[in-house]
Image (cartoon, rainbow, N blue to C red; front, side):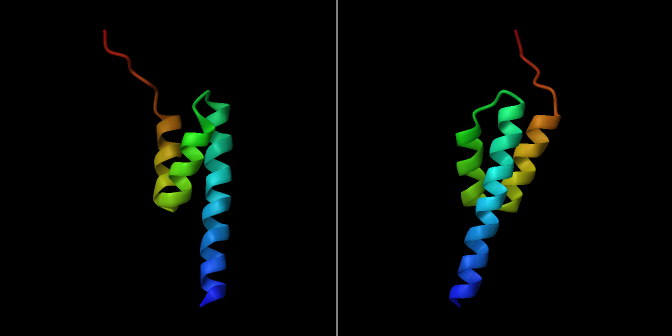
Length: 60
């Protein structure tokens, strides 16, 4: 059981690192993206990467 928990924590940590670097490269807050992805998981990583790909539209 501990092996499964370690695997989950390590995979979430790797996803958080990827999200942090991706957010930093786009000028976003890397800590916020990394923490969000760490707690949410792969779905959070996909959300962060999709937000970075889509252009930001500001309303006047």
